[in-house]
Image 1 (cartoon, rainbow, N blue to C red):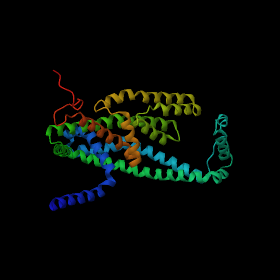
Image 2: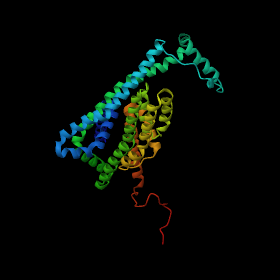
Image 3: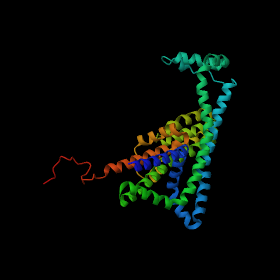
Image 4: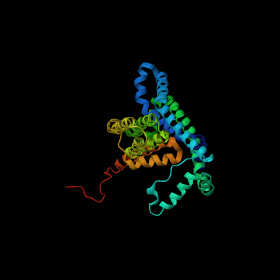
Length: 356
């Protein structure tokens, strides 16, 4: 008994020590593993001509340039907009038009909002003196959020670099996963099936949900930047978030198109409208093409993964959360479909008599 306690204690200490080292990088490593699983089939095709190292280097460089490049531009624009807003408020350089007439007639809060809006538009120093204490915490949160965006950019670049290295050791990783699951399940066939199911789910969700959302948000961002919207960066990030949550992007693009028609000339506004329609319709082509490769996961699972991932680890969690929950959901369903040890179907009533 003493020997067993010592063994278990040493294993516990070792696991605790390793966890302290790995946990700060857990989401980055998980996203790197997800990218590696997603890119491994492409690596196998390129490796026949370029070799393992050449293929990994090419995947890493193209991935950073094509996928992370627009994301870095978007995040940089968002951070610039936030810092510009904070500096304008601190320097009392914020100008607002007069409040609209319909606001005063809004029940309950219309009159108060009209008074505040009028005070800000006509006498900003007096408005900051009266309501400045209400803005301190939101501005501090915006400053912290903008500073965290730079760390998120670095984390995403680092994740792609790690993924490019991991694909070189893809065969060893597959064998390790198979042996581990074989030890857990006690069956080699079952382990092989679970490895294939996990890889298919990762690729399906990563390509069909995150990939489609990323492509559409980049295309929308091109239109936002081309038309000259000052909030192009924040709008692109919102489009990415809505796309991953599988919320129709028309909820975002319709007000933006209305604003463009109100502020721009007719011809560029029409071109912007056509571009948004094309991007919106591309969902009907991209999603069946990419999502069909994996296992379909209910939207609430994806939604919980997006929100929970962002709360836990910010921008990186936005990508890791839905994939991690989707894999867990699919493996849970697969486990529930298995027959118990006595050979009965889990859907059968144990009290039912066999049919004669």
